[in-house]
Image (cartoon, rainbow, N blue to C red):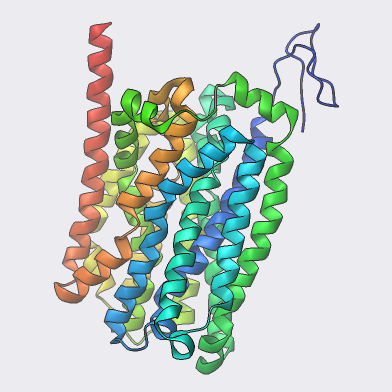
Length: 444
């Protein structure tokens, strides 16, 4: 961990003894911690998500028709997003009572234990309904752990970034999503194509969950090495990035929590429309090879990375909020012809995937924290965490379930309408945020 003097007469020693200086943490060093942490979380996230579309309907719901089994699987998938805000509140209390390091260790230990538990979980054919109950319990505990894993690094990164590069550094924290997806999808594609169906559904699908557990252990130590350092703790204190009571947050800044959640809705809805939902659609309603389709998604993941890098440059030139609004408009236009592409042949479906991933990268690159400055310094730490939780809950938790249910019962155009609603919600939230700012300025 690097530290630099605040003036010629005050320094922070290498042994962590504060001699009166303001600790300095390089934005690049914070960004490395953010990317490592988010990549491990998203790998775990996508391992479960891909399995919920390809594996769990057959392993845990074999008594139902394929469509109904997949809907059941997606309902369990959503449970983590329901319990995530509860995890945030619980682990904020743990942080206040003990320490940030204790909180992070406990959260990632719970996440790793839940993931490993799923890897060892017998299917419905062996223990009956108990398998479904245990799967739901492990999924709920994954959500609690993900809420508790909030370390404040993205907020510290945003505050330490140079003013003319804030869009770029905000984007860096989002790169963990496509990287985690690329690794998870590649691993499933390899296993799916290399193993027989019996071997894949018997034991092959469990391997990615073991890998997720191992990656979480590595990420834990990488993040703790940064989080528990003297410079980091001093920076968090100076920036007032500490927990506040949730009741106080909603009393003072409640409307900004909901503005932030809805401002990201287009990105979060798009997130599952191009990652998890298409896998279920391809498996249930087409004859395409799953491993080949996963590799198309991997290519899409690289396009998403390119889109995120571009979003950082665009946001620094035109502003983060205008960039988020422009990408919401692009997603709204995409929703108009997305059903036609998804309902076409393999070529059209590949265009849907690649274009969708590109738009996802452009929008998701600036979806986190675009309006968190509304919280001010005191409420930013807790406000950013709960805003993210609510954005996932409202925009992404039920997206695969709703999208699959709509297209199966009413047709693919309704998936387009669902995606359009997310884009309109983002635009409405950004307009409302602008109106509030103008009113505050008018009041002086």
